[in-house]
Image 1 (cartoon, rainbow, N blue to C red):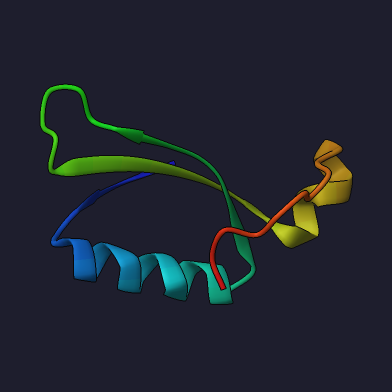
Image 2 (cartoon, rainbow, N blue to C red):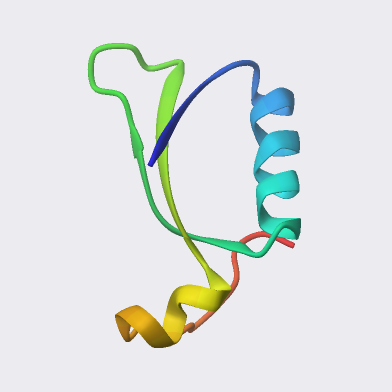
Length: 61
């Protein structure tokens, strides 16, 4: 899980980089106290089998 502090453009750019490195987004949450912050959770595609994850759709490319 990471919390990103940045502009929407910076956040989207970072999420694309993370996705290209093989990480799949499985959860996100807007910070309830600071609405300009967002928390993201990822799983690496190599960990799918280990944790029994079944990919359904990739949000980011």
